[in-house]
Image 1 (cartoon, rainbow, N blue to C red):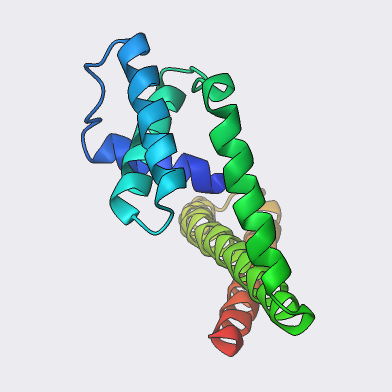
Image 2: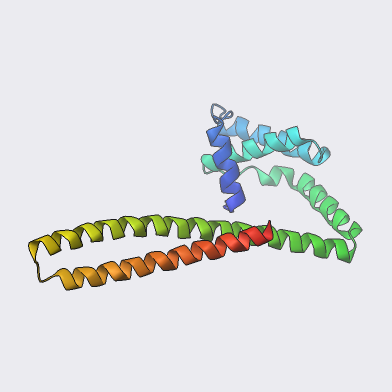
Length: 179
């Protein structure tokens, strides 16, 4: 089964919209997908056909079924031939620009994910620092001999939060420069 991030996002959006094709039997689902796939190939610019095919595909994914690819082999071959023809029409400069744009977008997605991870690490770290500060205050009030160790842990937690914040700042600046 196909499991790219894009596929997962499309399946999630379909499920969020209410799984329009949930009540179909597996056979009906397959037959409708075949029809939608063929319609999409026949009219590649028709967004409605493409959207329907994607939703039917998503329902297959949610049921952990493969769409009946074997029944659309000729249509798939026509689609591939069409794509190859369009790629040949592009000159090398255009193709290179498309590749750079695709790479730039995928880099942006990767930086966005890293930024989110860093932001979450900062939040978790700040929560740990607050707990450790409370522990240090409690140990000071009690005159505990463990205060030295607790302060060392607090310093290390604070350093970790600073490093995570630096990562956030770095990823944010990279993304700002790529906008």
